Image 1 (cartoon, helix red, strand yellow):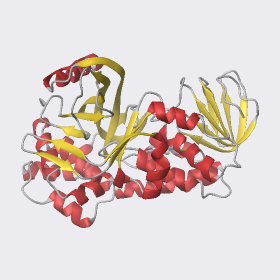
Image 2 (cartoon, helix red, strand yellow):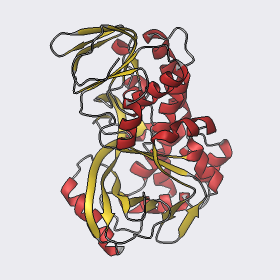
Image 3 (spheres, rainbow, N blue to C red):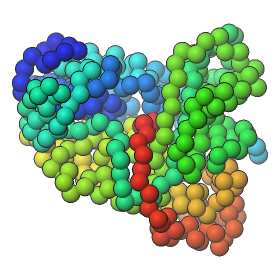
Image 4 (cartoon, rainbow, N blue to C red):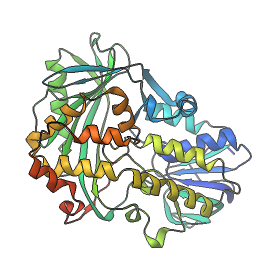
Length: 404
């Protein structure tokens, strides 16, 4: 079927993906490659798939096979990455990849056999159908709701928030590898660092990022700080290509049932809406790729079978990440805002394989011991306070953000 920004020309599909973000885009990519007989519809309320985002991941976050099938979307891949702290600078020999929303939209919207409806809002999402504004109803055997993070209760959390400017510099900026964390900047509003992705000799993304206790995002102020950072680095900005901003959840306590309330158990969910993200870094792509690979193996592929396998992945993910929630409590509850940089600085002195497993969400028991032992940057009594989930009470509602 042709792609239109109007009404679909058929009334039934095998799969309807509600929301054209990262998770559903990866599902569509895998279904097209492995199950080309399926009729798939993507419905997106915005004017394009993927919105205005950059998603990044480490090469070790995904399997070699996933790294290969993600390649057409990748705007740039690097062999190494840098971190910078007041006490040291370190180059980490781990591959790093970034997907930009332009390439994401181009790849997903041109998948063979995929129908894409842009600028269409739905009023109802049901296990076997969706309803558009205006009353048009479209039926499918499998309906997956991936419309992003929604209001969630029953959790305690901190925030990762950021404003980024993708810029063209008048002269080559000189960065060869991503700087995934420059924490030499002034520490404001919690733990602050700047994140730089050099896409080519003169184009780069510069993001001002905070691990903060509150969600307030002063976009203009942070954009000025990005410009100040560029000026201090000697980069003269010729133009701003685009900007992006967001607030992500950093989980302190809670369970995946907050993302799968009882009334929604019959409906399949994906991505951030399903609670599928790394609870310390906010990275969501590795879990989105895992879900996409799992769904192509389902026969029959129905809403019920999709919901069951996605919940299973989510429950396993949340069980593994209890350690991350504890670390988040140490950072947000035990450590004072002016101590958080010391916590991160200590972490990045640890062995590279440990750092890779941490980002992949699969630290070993020995990794966990290494992270927690040694001379702590937080006084022991305060550290012990943060180890308990009860230190995260009272619980607060979670506000929407965007997946990284």
